[in-house]
Length: 185
Image 1 (spheres, helix red, strand yellow):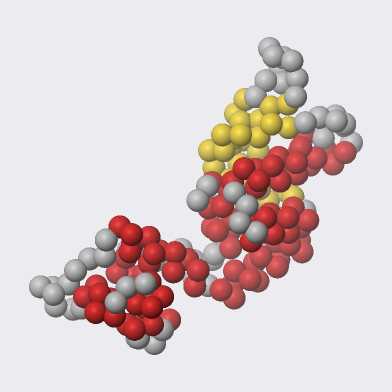
Image 2 (spheres, rainbow, N blue to C red; image 1 turned 45 degrees about the horizontal axis):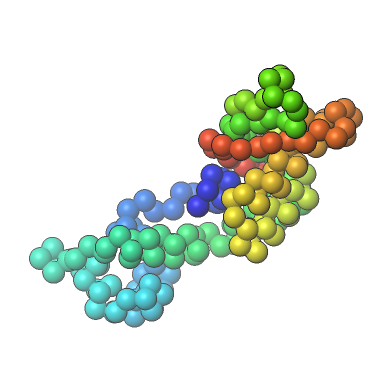
């Protein structure tokens, strides 16, 4: 998961997901009314394996392996705050969001000009159309590169061309994203 995808995920949540694997397993069990069978089916392991992960007896407990830890994390992420996520997504698509980033920006220009790429801190309000485009791309399985192109186009128009008031035809190069955060509402 890239910086943009992580930033979108953080913006859609109001509370952090459980941090430990044990807390994540407790969450999955609570969501499935304590059914180790349903959790096992969800994670692709046997019911007995889940029972070993959550047993109270220390001598019988077996921690999940790295592959299972990733599966547990993905299952929790997919089920964490679904109504809040939907509401915040709808709000971003309707009202827009604020995009905060530190990345390398440059322009299509001759080498050695002041338009050479350099690291910039940028905070910019972006409209709901950009949020709709980002979420649609993410839902279609777009990678970090496609999401970067969407944000570069939006930042070029909003930040560098001041909503079309100057620098017409300026092409933005947006790369090496150090962080990407989104503020909704």
